[in-house]
Image 1 (spheres, rainbow, N blue to C red):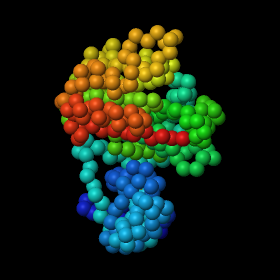
Image 2 (image 1 turned 90 degrees about the vertical axis):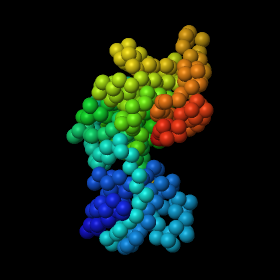
Image 3 (image 1 turned 60 degrees about the horizontal axis):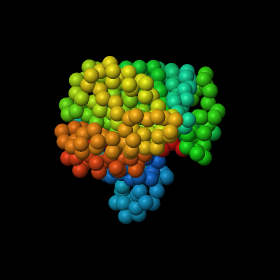
Image 4 (image 1 turned 90 degrees about the horizontal axis):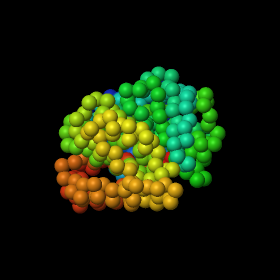
Length: 338
Ligand code: FES
């Protein structure tokens, strides 16, 4: 049994299988609806049901209040149609969003690297190519762990038969512990994607500042490789933050890229270098490295931020004080996969 869901105001029609959520069906059919958490807690995917009935699924009472339920609102990531539906969504699609359909993949682990003491690089070979925009993420299924985990894709979209992930070990986190301790080369995993709204607005030709912390380098790495492969001539700055030298991963790769491309500038920053590091570079937090480099004046740039929430908050305030418009700041607060 399938139901037809008409999405207004675009008039897109999607087919929803029995038991499938509206959001899952929409993303798999290339119809974009706003969403964030994907499991009923943030409220980003709220839509109005204009005609028909839907089961509300696991919508949290905080994300969908009683009064909203009475008004016929549902969360698209949880709602399962019980009849054909007409829904009204607040769709504001960025013109640079390419909107590739979500697909399921099975994948073989072809490489596991120790990028830092706490971050592993896991490269998966897919059973068929994935089309994605640099900066997007996949949802990975982990054996015996409930729910999927989101990881940004670190490779360029031009390498469509693989996905490279940067996985930080979260103490006590079942999924990342399994990926660090049990996963081995040759194993098979399932994943779906691409997801996410973090991508370079290429039609806006302003110079670009990337600020990355922790394993938040993955999306910027993909976005920078994509821009450079395409011969983009804007100035591209990457500020990468880590505690110490051992945690500053992929430094050789990024230094080589900067040597090869005169418009790419790589500025690493360590906030707690050890004596053995003999660190000659910037010492301090990564947003402070950006302030130092630009003398606090960022006007005329677009910024992409990826990392833990405190890093993002500090970077936003530095950028805005340095005259970057809010509309020119894009971010991926850590998809903290535990
Ligand atoms: Fe967060 Fe649906 S996406 S509640």
